[in-house]
Image: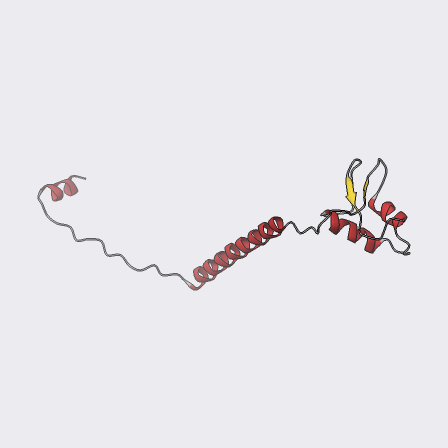
Length: 120
């Protein structure tokens, strides 16, 4: 420590440190590109989710028939009772899309909108 302190007091100028440009190895460049790509994909994914949420993604529900789910009801049973088709799957999908459901699970008390023309 003493020599450094003396050099400063004596007024001897030290040369400025030389800054070298940042150099990445091949692996470093690959990692940097992968991180940038993942970040970009994450931003695009979040932006798409926000866009879908702000658009609503739901058609106009005004005037559509609706029912209230009771204890023990399932979406499959409701769709089967409403459709004349042998397979209630397409009706379940339509009801899910119309009500913004991510799966066929419904809770008692939920009000479901039904597609046009299904109610007998």
